[in-house]
Length: 376
Image 1 (cartoon, rainbow, N blue to C red):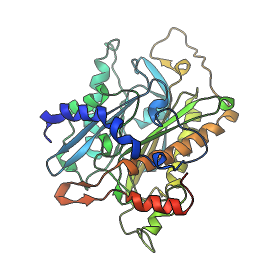
Image 2: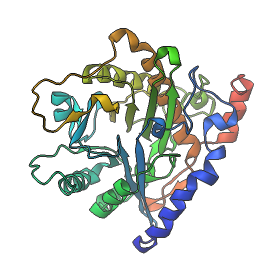
Image 3: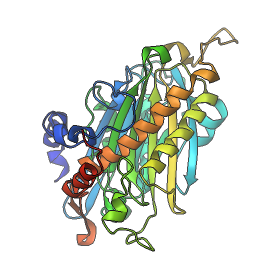
């Protein structure tokens, strides 16, 4: 597909969730992960105000890549920063913007996911996007947060085909509602547990007595381990692991956790750590060659941090430590399900040098789950 066909492709992406999501997600087959209930869309966009946009590049026989943008709210993020934290599960990656988030505890741009060698392009785009926003005319510093995984097996990553226009389009296409999963955006060329990976998302809504808050997770899966689905040793049963791996377990996973709970950076980091437990529940091992990063953000309007203020003291509500446990559980469950959704939604893909990665054999997996009593 050439770039002139992108407009038609994006029209397809708008309609994509409406006619594909019904059977492309684990829960649609009667498999419920955890005990908490998902939100309306079972997606990160269940967190009020959150938007997600994709740019997908599938061209010729070797370009299989893209961009995914996550916007924590619809306003000027630089002028209304949000509390944030980043947790590094294993640091073999190129996450841009980490140190300032760590130091100041806030996020001031959209979160961008793409491939490893397109991080500089995405950073430059986010800087330009931010500088050009109304109200930012005097801004002299922008901390763009851009994460990545390496899609070089299926994609001609050395060609660096992602352009600034592609990144900007993902930001401008961001919307609420259902989120396209699988071979889209930053997940177009990724591989997970030896099968086709991609973008996945899920959410959890806490009971009213626990605050009624929503936690949403979006993942870009490109990692390995011994696949488990709802506790069933699927990877082992499929023969992908005996005494050694039948494929390379190296790779990366970007995890974005958003919540409307009023949290400060310290508790957001604690929340981010729990996403790694969700990854572990799918069989992920955070291998030596894996860049496993979690970006956690509170979207609570009352917690936003103004770029400028005449008041040197900022007073904001924040949950007590004792109230965090339900949010921890929600993060673990939503991360686990988001990863599994990325596998269930992804389709077999052929890319660079004729490399082909098969989709998860869903029928076999579902039969295993049925035999294990995991299906309703």
